[in-house]
Length: 152
Image 1 (spheres, rainbow, N blue to C red):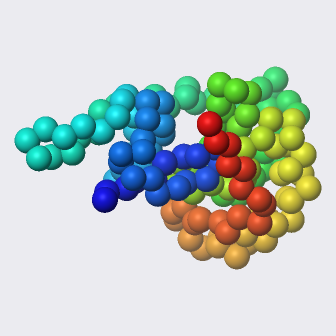
Image 2 (spheres, rainbow, N blue to C red):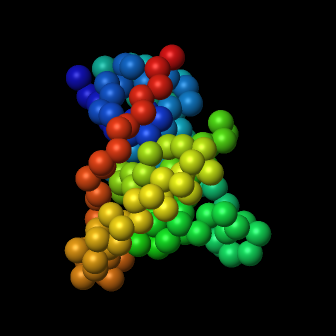
């Protein structure tokens, strides 16, 4: 049974192709794909209807957009990650194409509070991996927070 990493709220979970549904975000060969419908079989081969994930526009974290996001910005810089905002008003810090998630998925004010509370952990992480991060390589972090799994 083939499976792919699928983003379930704020964690990647290997999910059998048969369990994927429209709207799921999956990672295949370092590419993010939006699932368009259920897997189907044609001539004995499984096909997953999907399209490249439409990345959010790049926003510079300066001025009004960065207001009340100072610690989010610091964590993004330390982890070489992006802020991923979701339609439900939540966000997480990660490099999703690389499969790395650097924060829980929270409302932006709660994410700012989380980053401020744990900034020393992020600094230690950046210091410990500085030689790798300086090359532009993404280094996964071991989560210390409880992942949220929303079902339904």
